[in-house]
Amino acid sequence: MSELCAVTGVGQTHHDAERSDLSMHGLVREAAVRALADAGLEWKDIDAVVVGKAPDQFEGVMMPELMMADALGAVGKPLLRVHTAGSVGGSTGLVAAKLVQGGVHKRVLVVAWEKQSEADASWVLMMKIPFAAPLVAGAGGYFAPYIRAYMERSGAPKDTGIKVAVKDRLNALKNPYAHLKMPDITEEMVADSLMLWDPIRYLETCPSSDGACALVLTAEDALGSCEKPAWVVSTAMRSEPTMFAGRDGVNPQAGIDCAAELYRKGGITDPRRDIDVAEIYVPFSWFEPMWMENLGFAEQGEGWKMTMSGATALDGDMPINASGGVLSSNPIGASGLLRFAEAALQVRGMAGEHQVDGAKLAMGHAYGGGSQYFAMWLVSSDKP
Amino acid sequence: MAEDPITGIVCPIRLDYTITPGRAQTRFLRGLESGKLLGQRCPATGKVYMPPRGSSPTHGLPTTEEVEVADRGTVTTFCVVNLQFASTVREIPYVCAQILLDGADIPFFFVVQEVDVNEIRMGMRVEAVWKDPSEWGPTLENILFFKPTGEADASRESYKEHV
Image 1 (cartoon, rainbow over the protein chains, first blue to last red):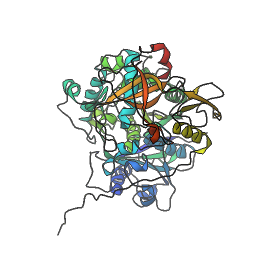
Image 2 (cartoon, one colour):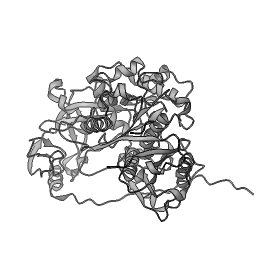
Image 3 (tube, helix red, strand yellow):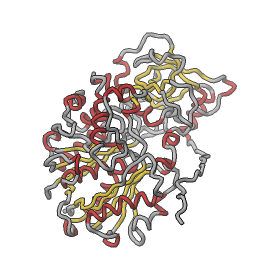
Image 4 (tube, rainbow over the protein chains, first blue to last red):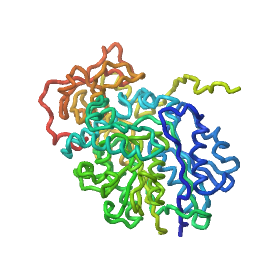
């Protein structure tokens, strides 16, 4: 039987376009120190460190973990890096959870980060490869055609994405760590912003952020003074090839299967009813309705109704991205772990102004690559 | 006395790399040298992959059978790019489309030009515009872009499995 695992410490940086006040080492420490303080632990209490970030080229530093063992408090301890593209923050949290659940370690520090200001991620995504078709327009150029396909398939109102963009930025105003702070944002402003990758507008796109997130994961018999743990009740990871004949890029099978496994292991039969709040990886606004369907919160073709009815708002029946989400802060490698961390904060009742009242069960979700990696967890205020 | 902090130094990197394409990719690249698009068929599903990778992504089997696919096809979905990237100097706006070549079972990304960005649509028929044969090499860059053929649009049914 596996050990129980709980989140006892959560830390994150103040995310921004350029944290030029900090080196990469300083950035990860800012998050890690806050997580340790929250858990009431010191560096010496940690048994192992698991780190994750997006591909090295995204910030132009090869294998930064090699020179960061000291900054991460990992000297003399196991240090492991996880790598699953944009979903890496989520997968990193899950690998660490397995180390605790498997009885390998009692207290694991998880750190994920990106310092996007130090390089040009779009350049990396557009490198010429001699035998493959060129990806000629960065990440937005890759995902925009799938959004168009979703719009065509679902018949969703054209302003669905605009509604998500406004909602998440207004939520971000309640999150002191969020990168984008746009108190004056309106639907008109989003609608009038430049159509970067038609149908994706500038204000329907995530920012480029510098930031880090850290968690302390602890075994049941090592909770220490923690009075409000977030219990990990279910985890799931899935992948599929980026390209294969008949692949549904709008509604990837790996995402459907990952959610099904997550719910089965967590005893969830109706996610919209059973889950109180979810932090979902939405880098472009239209991914909110798309993932609502992929994750079973809505029937096929009806995810947009949740957005348009206000169900996904902070005061709706299924709040999505109460923190402001990826649309408000996107340090790529950390973005998935931030989803997991925000889910934990919600069930611990520690989400501050963006707290969903009475949240007891929360979901964290991350995806990466060409919608080919998925990582999810459910955390609860109640011990399983 | 406090000094101004150094908040960043610029360290340009470049990346030159050598790829060993392997036997399957070599056949594909040799085809391109003579202006042919050679897909490969999955022995389990019969699906034709273009560009081929030498194995079936769904079944892990070698795709030994070669199938020449057309240099024309159908736009399954697309986006219009209004953003200039440092790494690609292109006149904006331009169209980036998923194109399902006739005879292939998977769409691939390419730029579509010589089309009004207000005219591009799902189902539009397009064809490759090649460089002069004297400039052909073992690379997909032999194709400059795709352009509309002027044919009637393909039916939704003909490409709905590919978006």
